[in-house]
Amino acid sequence: MKRARTTRAAAILLGPFFVLFTVVMVLPIGYAVWLSLFTEKQSGLGFGGTETVFSGLDNYTAALGDRAFREGFGVLLGYCLFYIPLLLIGALALALLLDSTLARARRFFQLALFLPHAVPGIIAALIWVYLYTPQLSPVVSAMESGGIGFDFFSPEGALPSIVNIALWEWLGYNMVIFYAALQAIDRSVLEAATVDGAGAWRVALSIKVPLIRASVVMVALFTVIGSLQLFTEPLILNKGTGSAVSSTWTPNMYAYTAAFERNDYGLAAAASILLALTAALLSFVVTRLTGRKGKKA
Image (cartoon, rainbow, N blue to C red; front, side):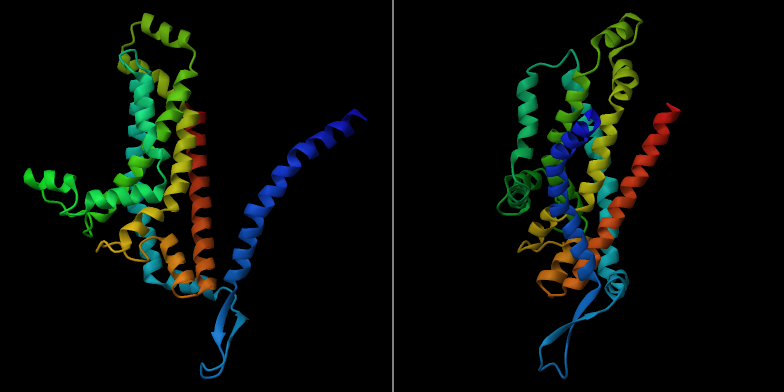
């Protein structure tokens, strides 16, 4: 009887979650998979209407065979190699600094660093487009007066420009996560290390960082997944700025262009599924690698 009540209570509490998960996750993914297996073709000489026909894996083959789609993954690779280390190291360094005994006005700096994350991504991108535009930006004018010439919209400058926007948005948010984890560390452990003669650097790198390893892994995992979904920032730079960012610069932009500019929803769905599989694979790899390092430690 008691076991039945426990099962019933668990079903009542977990039921809303599974319903919501099915509606917002399982059904859309299933629909995308189904959509990717079909394509629309015009009948006759093109004077008739279009008909939806089963194409199997043709959309996946077309996406993988498209050079623009493959180059988008190359852009994502460069973005991840550039952005993820800067984000993790920067957020962790700021959190350690705020957690140190030398820090002053901690609440002010926490709020100041977190505020950019409160700005919607599209607004943040528009702000930085203004700051990147010559003849408008005080930043560009200051750089030019100092003899520094840099085109933020050039093929060489597009990637650093987008990385800078993403760092501005997410650095403070992840810093707060690391800082909260540092605050949960037992202070007696840190005091014992100090009594044993460990300096501030030794305490930070040998004690604090290993103790918040779970938070670092979580942030790294979410950052990898978020990086693969890069869309808003390059889309804004693509619209009317003369930037080197094309409409198929990332896989997400490729899928968006296929769906809403070319009306090829099957190809867009296939590209989205391939991107989702890549994210799942990378998440698995990151989890396994960090898990093995944890066991060795």
